[in-house]
Length: 97
Image 1: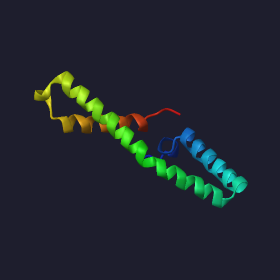
Image 2: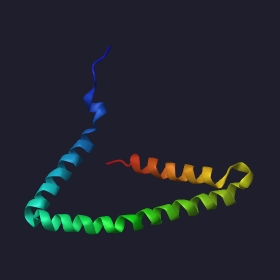
Image 3: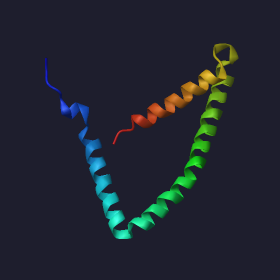
């Protein structure tokens, strides 16, 4: 039985990106102040529902286009929508750094 290979478990590019992100966030909080960073974070959270709505609408239109292309006899709209949303999530997961 082989030992655990850490280099395959944690890709070094992803680890370096996480370390750089933490360093940048620490510098940002130190230079601006925690109150201003919290205000900007809350302002960003206000826009988050709109981003979700736009991405849902995009996946909805893509699923509708697939249903029109393959016909309703090949699958239901909601199955196509699930496949489209899952495909989008997988594409985002496998973005190369």
